[in-house]
Amino acid sequence: MIKTIIFDFGDVFINLDKEGAMLHALNLFKTDSFSDEMIATNNLYEKGLISTSSFIKFYKDCFPSIAETEIIETWNIIIRDFPKHRLEFLKTLTEEKKYTLILLSNTNELHIKQVVKIMNSINYIKFKNCFDKFYLSHEIHLSKPSLDIFQFVLDENSLLAKECLFVDDTKDHTIAAAQLGINTWNLNPKTEDITQLFEIKKKLF
Image (tube, rainbow, N blue to C red):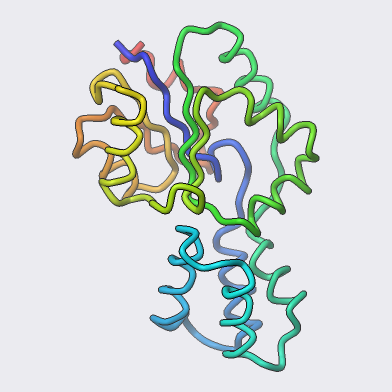
């Protein structure tokens, strides 16, 4: 029996353009792929282990001809819209009080600022208040798919893995959670929507 639902954020609630953002960045930086150093820096920033200013400085040092504003715009272009029906679904779920609701997102300071801008601060606060716990990777210094982040959530909330459902669009993340005995739904954002939760995973409920 599921007592706790753990949700990812991007491409579960807010839409992302991962492919478009990658192509835009590669075009801006005039490269075919991200270097190991760039990937490592992105990961450090996602875990909040370097500041936003240090993150931007790294890219400015690598690409001195590119303006800081352009770097930030390119970084944030991945964030798209937040469909209203998903927020309404979440609000209804919260009001029913049947489950403990947790958000667990790999994100960073710049992306969250962009999310607030797109959603507007009032809707973002409404969204955040729907959850019993709200975990962002750059605030807890852990990121998916490390087993540590899932164990952290279980331990912090005294949860039994078998009573949890984790929803994420990234296969590596759901595979990792399943290793700890957590039930999972690897949501496909092209064909599925979070509002179909109780239809698609009805056997768990």
